[in-house]
Image (cartoon, rainbow, N blue to C red; front, side, top):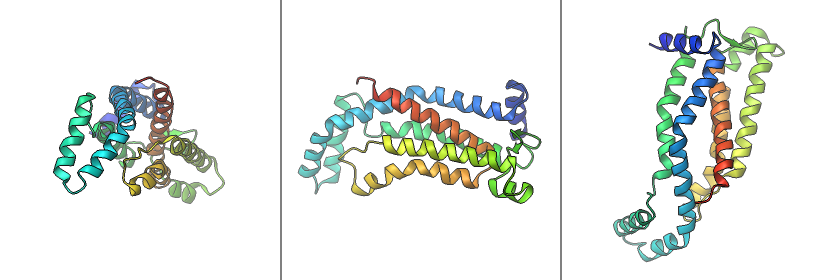
Length: 213
């Protein structure tokens, strides 16, 4: 099944698996765009409702069930949900799993590369096979560096609602760097997917930030 999927993607992209991964990633992000627009709206509503949410938390601190009902009712009046921000993340999981299966399949990406760097190999494998100073390793390092740059930009743009728990407010700005750690241990195909996906997400976030509620 995975081999057939790779063959289909490669054929649709003119024989280039790397280009196929880029096109696949862009298609996924485009399909998720409506959900991301809803998420952006929900986050802006949450920021606007922050004073009321804090008031509810103080009033019903000893009654979690009542707090949950009142919070849901407050969001329902605005036509959204407290969980709307998590929908795009959940919706992307199947596509991430599929790309992981493709990238780690032993034979799916054999013979496919990005500027000479095998798409099916990890950075450690490339160092072992080609040496530390080599074109394949430099290509992979460049991809990882770009993923890190996008993660840095994304971390700077994250706005955490004041009503969120303190631990969550500390963790959220660090989450974009998870893509860097993943790129270091996953094959180049997965790192390429992460680069395109996170770059799209950063650009999309910047555009939606200027969009009125």
